[in-house]
Length: 382
Image (tube, rainbow, N blue to C red; front, side, top):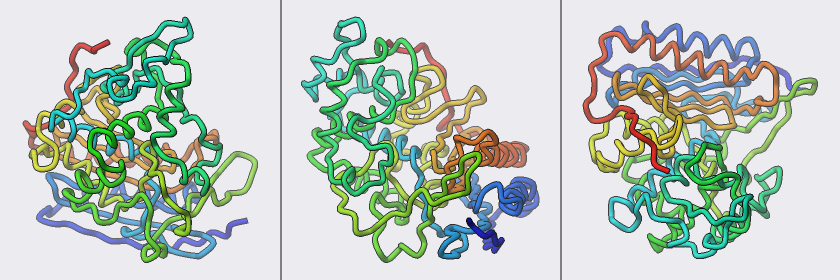
């Protein structure tokens, strides 16, 4: 059984933003209180506006067994926040005319010519549908074990998984509805590899992470950062908290998981989110950003979930959230490192939603609109 200690590590950063820290006291107080009440073992919150970090704080533990405190530099498994990173990488190929959003997947992966729906008919899937959860592909990748942080899973390759996806039946006609899929990013990642001539993880590194100076983001965290890596806690009703996993640097990483394999600090992830908020054309073209933030299927752009109020976001099963609002210039993140989605309370979800709500409320007043971004709603393609 875990013994709880509250050892807060608090960092406050405020650059050219006099008065903003007081405005954010409510949001960060919610984080501190959630840790104090043991709703989550630890948490890190980061808030930026117009490209400047206004405030970041960390509370609680990153590893209860090893008695490590959560700090702003703690590396966390960001899980499904990896998906918009994968989508952004694909958009680099679109910009270079090596890929088109309405190309059929089978143009690049011939095995998909034989994929059929439950009615026995063949329905071509487009790249756009892969990136907006509207392809009809099943939820989980074939061949993946229930506990996918296993050494054997990492030794597979993306092409093998994409080929296995092609052998599964479609759940519905592509474009007719939405179903969240962890399998679709493997198909997209394989196409990225074929069109770029590079491994998926290397392409992401050179085209997205390095240009954004995301030096604290990894598919395979090296040994030298192991003392900063958080454990992921599993919580279920009626049982004690347990360790879900700790990344083992001895694993041979042959396959980077395009649906959820990245580890990062919240501040690094906010750099990625800011790219969509500011839309300065430096890493992704302005048109690519606009396209990714345009509704392609109900509630989804390309890689990002969209909200009616004009903001975008993505969560991860490890208790992570990042979001952005081009109207206010706000980009934020909160990482908890707990899987509690099977509990009735689902405290990490409540904490993430409350933190985001209070940040947005605090910074909405006096915000200047940014003409470069914003969520757009257009007629959906099928």
